[in-house]
Length: 481
Image (cartoon, rainbow, N blue to C red; front, side, top):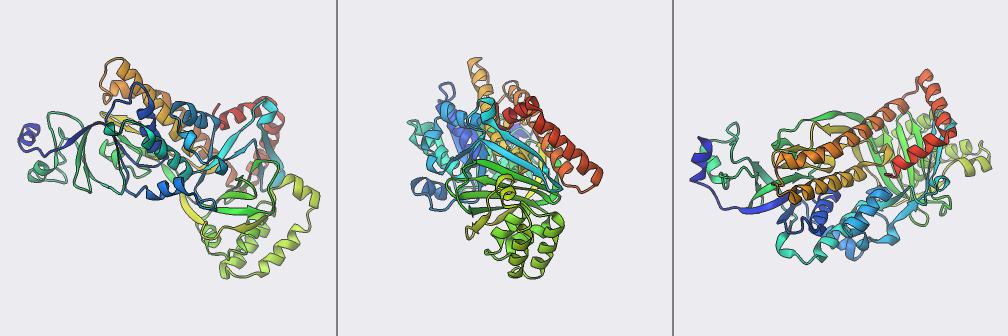
């Protein structure tokens, strides 16, 4: 009844094969992959991004002197995908990419309980590379804009999605029939209809949600996402080390408030991700920028009881420079050679304005597809940053989705049908689910000071560090191999 009524009063729409909502790395990667694949480049594709992409273009043309504070670890597998499958790596600012070959992870309760990964020991050259998110976005955007198929590729940035409508199932809970008459397109098709803030209406064979944790596309498709908040924040900052570290490794210390990671950038630059309680995150953002670098150094070395005392002082007065003498005195109790060999170099400066925080959470959609809908990236899953796999999971989503679409086209099938899309779920969901579970359990195991568990995890770390086959398996997993 409803479809027949609506069909007589449709509004004009622009029909597309694929509409991608979200212009982050996942969305731009998908658009780039679709337009470079010989099998899918003929598709009419539109990407819609709520914010302006001008800052991305400006970065691509003239990157700033200092690093931005959104930096991610990219695996060799993801890099190869961007190099060989879509060619966007040709546009990356490689002078701002830092490869590293190892990770040193250790327990705050026992610095000798540690795992040291070094991929050169298994004949590999690179474990991962640190790259700014905006650098990745800029390279993808440059690749897309370099393609000679402008008629079939549209990017609408600074444009928000105001509504997504299913033409065959009107939303009578939120609209009466008169409202529906004015909003929907061709009701003879079951293609989703996307209304934009600029007044345009798109009707698409396949709607892809790359629109983040609060994905409107996922809500439109009635796909449940399950998970929880960790009651923790990730505090990020760009810092300067005492000098360039020749070891080219990432450092991670597991504190009871959450892991603190220092990851290398080029020259003496580094990025930090400090998982912390809401109270500690507040201190880290407010503390004087001259004190902050010493606080990072202390958190990688000192006992937690000493750190808690320092936090208490700074909570009362974020500009209390007396803590610097306290930190220096406590660090002086360590053997200088031990400090140099077992810990990262001292942090000496934080780049002004680079400190920020974001809530930590874990979530996973029950499925990544519905009729004419697919989810990728954070719209499908969010993960604790301790393993640095968030962006890489999104890249894997894109690779699996494009593979499924290519096979569907080879078989003459409708790319929006669940018969085509289910192969994407089968190839992407199980591996993502396993990785999410591992990171969630690692967070819980290391965020406790319960002694029996502390003792057990210390034994476990030492055992893993001494068994080469397990270490090799973990290194291959971290590097996406």
